[in-house]
Length: 279
Length: 268
Image (tube, rainbow over all chains, first blue to last red):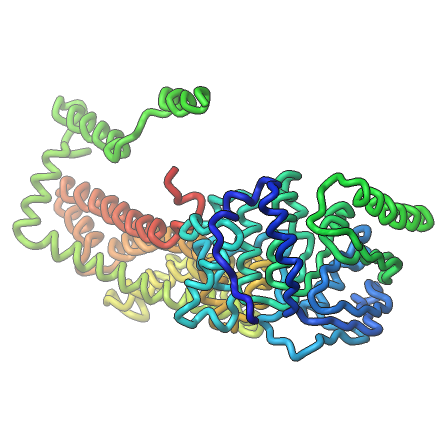
């Protein structure tokens, strides 16, 4: 991990607005790609819960540093795929391998719920993300850097209960980022947020991803979010990958742009036609 | 902006600030009425002595050293019994909340014992321990065991499983998971158990000291009854009330210190 978290106080104010400075920063970072993500290879992956076959054979290669979005209707197995990748479940058959030896701290998950410890201050919650490193003397300093990265440095000593939903999710993001993961899996992390907060969180995700270069896997039911953020969109239906769409649009992408909308329409078309054949 | 500024001002009309003295207004009023009713002769002093008489009786027994000795004996019994019973209850609550095996082995037995009113054991306890200290400690410990056991168990079982999963993902070992997630999550429920237990502690002690004792507040009240010293009887009842209030305040203070993260304990 060569690139460490950087404190740029200007970002704190910039976050909610889509100004040109932010876009220029994202573009500049993309010009010098950092590849410290892990590649991911999945072969013949199956998962059943009793008689219920949730995943029925997934073969997939994700190159290091790619931003992949997984979309599908609810119950299609997309969250199970994510739980398998992050080691929360064990596969019934098949394998998941990372390009290199992965430490526990290299793979992190962010859930739909923030899952913050209500009895720990914001900064102590972020420290939890350090894994084994949380007993080291620099734990607090690293946690503070991660908090600054998501623009919440001034909330460090607050209890989570006083934060808004979006702020809690940013603390959860800081906790996931603080160990400099090489694979970051998102399980609908923005699903419970209001529309405006979602958009600013999407920008934040894109920014930290382009800065840190981890491999990102975003499970979402929101196709517009998937095409706005991802390099590649996987459509999962009935436990299989039915479509693998690469998104070649330049970053940063603007919400509501015509090419995004067209792609979103195509993917929604896939989902809806499959929906109809199902009925 | 002007609207925002006027809002807090509107609110002060609705909620006047309460000072720390407010909670004592009702007890003081009751005392005043009591004094008036007795002083004016509406209630004979054989039935209920005036507060001033109680204060005088208190002063007398304070001077003889008897009051302090009895309070100390009762307080010691309450505290030691509470620590023993509460400690064992807490230990069983932890063990059964964390280990399936321990739960299977002991919970059914404990639930059966729980349904026996512990004061029903007084005759047996007197036969076993006489009217010695051990008898009182045993009863108090038995009484406080169950609320602490049940609430510790409940607290541990109801810790948010999503938080436990989060802790595991972030590489916490069992000890760390307990210290950072399970114990703090169970603490509000444990405090509920402590406050229940404090009530049961005084109740048990009063009954035990009234029936079988040679010292303590309950004994003092029973002795006074023999000699028709009704002011001393009322005095010991009032001291019980005061001690109960003190114990409750102490547990509230502990709650406020350890649960400051909880929205219910935050100042607004």
